[in-house]
Amino acid sequence: KTTVARNIAEKLGKEDVTFLSLDWYYRDQSDVAPEELDKLNMDHPNAFDCQLLLTHLRQLQQGLPIEAPVYDFHLHKRISETVPITPKPVAIVEGILIFAMEELRSALDFKIFVDADADIRLIRRLSRDIKERGSTFDDTIRRYLSTVKPMHDAFVEPSKRYADIIVPRGGENQVATNLLADFLEKFMVR
Image 1 (cartoon, rainbow, N blue to C red):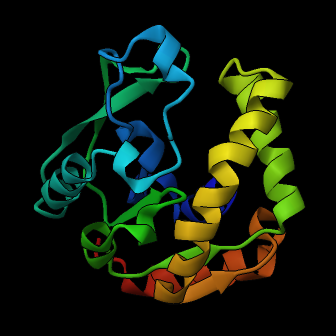
Image 2 (image 1 turned 30 degrees about the horizontal axis):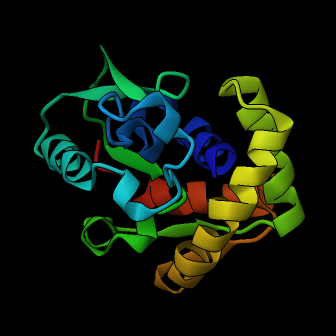
């Protein structure tokens, strides 16, 4: 998802594209006891502050800048630092559960579902969680089996029916990325 979104942004020109990640909008978990953090289901739509993301999208559509939250996966909370984002002709919102949230899904003009084989998703999850989020191999596998896979089956996979376009093979699919960038460029208001 991220690779496709970033490739499209690069082809359209970063000066014309605002990029938002659903991962920035995880709900703050600083009030949860440390021994309870491992029990949290961070792969359910309720793990996200959808209302804040919707508010930010509306502000960008109105030509107003936003301060996007920063979520620290090691601390399981939002930190006080924010990321200033200015409105641009195209806003790309990237995230695994976006289409599973009806209100958010309805706010999008064009919906692209990036599909990848289950084994590729698992390998990417392992790599990302270990390298970027400080997880161990065993913890990542446990989380994958207890929440990631069941939530994918319950929310992500069924939500692909709401997509306008489904891109198979993820970021490796340069033909799809080029076609999407060309298509979106025709609708950009500069």
